[in-house]
Image (cartoon, rainbow, N blue to C red):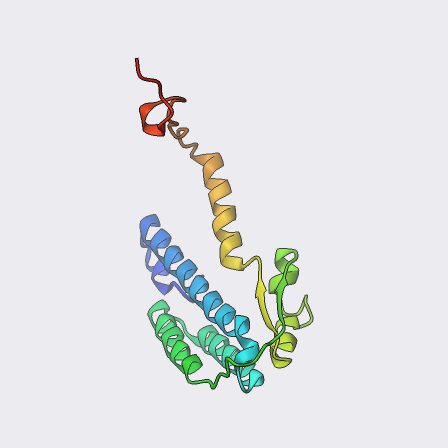
Length: 168
């Protein structure tokens, strides 16, 4: 965290930290969407190995940056590069969904680089769980325990708003 948020060492407040964490979560979602778009369409690219090279280069460059603004610029540049890859939508690739435990699904060492292997074979695939979803879900569950919200108001049965009320 201190690499992405060097200003935290300067003693800024909790609100600043929350904003930065929100921005980092947004960057994670953007990086996952970038990878998901490429892998979802892997079978349509003329050179599926180029997809793996592009994803690897993007994540490598992201890991080297120390600034969120630069990281968002990198994502934009790689989005543009992905649009330059040649596609052939007349193909009929195999399409699958990967499902499983969060760690096994998302850690390339744990799943023996299945994403890269499927992409190289020209298989279109999607994962059902991402790290950003897990972070959001885990944070929401924790916050609900700490800050119980009042229950939502429900419309009374038979109210005029529901259209099933009786006139008297």
